[in-house]
Amino acid sequence: MTRQLDEQIAGRFPVGKRLRVLDVGMGQGTQALRLARAGHQVTGVERDATMIAAARARLAGEPEGIRERVRLVQSDGRDTGVHFLPGSFDVVLCHGVLMYVDEPDPLLAGLARMLAPGGLLSLLVRNGDALALRPGLAGDWDTALAAFDASAYRNRLGLDVRADRLSDLTATLAGIGAPLHTWYGVRVCTDTAADGAEIPDDLGTLLAVEERAGKTDPYRGVAALLHLCGVRG
Image 1: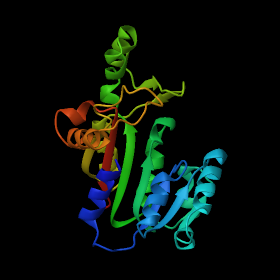
Image 2: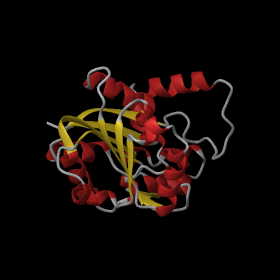
Image 3: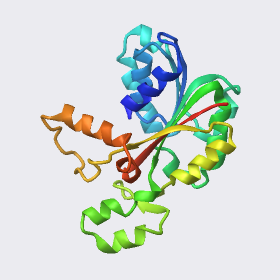
């Protein structure tokens, strides 16, 4: 996903431009810190106290120049309008958040308002069109059969969450003024890997396979996750 995001940033903004980035639901700040290291001004929003504490701890270990480029805000992602003016950001990230939101449309509309004209909205969501694949490959036939008509699933944390379909999000993005520009699959071939599995020696080849599959039909359509990139009109 990082490679996909960098590809979209490089194709949309001039080389060397210092971007204003908003990372909503930033977790421990993996993408926020990476983009700050690349020279961008990053604001991270996270409501979970444990997660934002971890992000602050990681940020404290960075050089001063990087720390100065990062602002952390403990808040719900649906409250961006409380903290920021419309059009304040060139890039807005919302990765791994929508599955925990019952009604995602208001959140997405608020994120789109944060974008400057031509700005990039990057979403990472659970693929509702592929919910049967993981249990099917695991031989859990009852769960797989039920998943064909489902919009919710139980994740590896044991939480009941929801998934999104590409067609629905395409319509939503068009309606909020940030129509879909391109999309990728994420975890096409590796979704069944066990949690905590050791990183393989041929990681470079694995990533090359995932990168190719994530942008190639029909493989990307059955990915566990979808990475959607909308552009503010």
